[in-house]
Length: 407
Image (cartoon, rainbow, N blue to C red; front, side):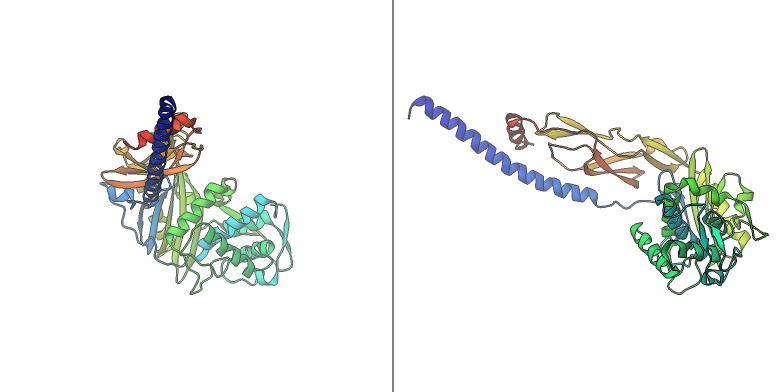
């Protein structure tokens, strides 16, 4: 072998050895990166922002309650958040959710008439006073269910969608599971008492928020103050519709065993707060306590947008790519609720897969960012790649593999 051939052979061997070593190192780094991502995906303990306020939550006469900021999705404060409770007619929020879904999919129309069965007509409790074997429009039945809290109209709608109330209840429980309402079980559509008909204020808050976010076009039913059907005028039982002009929903409930319940929501200056309160002693008590909670939530907390979607929260190093860096951020705008005047104290802490090896696809999730204040995590958001990064050529990849050995 000539001297020139030995030199070329030696160079190729060295390069091959370096490539093999770098590949082994890359695999090790990739495994480390997976571990880092798994660690980042483990949810941090999230503090209720109400615990960080110098103004404590009001003392409320209720078995369980929560306050939820709809813009940020944060629970501001709560009491007995995951205690199993009877929802009474708050159940009708799930019934309405499925009706709205049927309307949006075209399986029902507002003008469509529904046959009122003997079963629907005989349903006990609060009533719309529909007549058996009559035809009533979906629009009228919705007003009967939402404004008048009619159990008869709820069952009529359930039968129109699923064929029977029992089949509709199965759909309610399927939807509850889909939404992650892990402590909720429905036994009937209107919310009649049953030992196994249970939920929590956390689950009810999630359900109500999902309804508002997905079906804003139907929210007007919940702010309607009265409805007359069959020459019988009935007022909406939500007293807050008269007490506060910013309140535009949502649903009352009452049975002897559940007490007086109310899911209330109000929007002020573009910010929406939702409260869930169950087990109050009277109609007036549920209204007064809910209004206290709404006012405290609006007056003592700010909700601010920290990042627009597509805005980088982190600029990360990329290896083996045509670009050396890429922005990481959220797919949606990031809002956070903080005690009033403390938005500038929020600190983002990012955990993401390292090393980031090209090719990278826009939208791919690579980690999480925690938004903290005073050492307390307020919320966490997924970190996504904000731009495609193509893989570099062979020599660029080899060069980065070697550099990774010394990182």
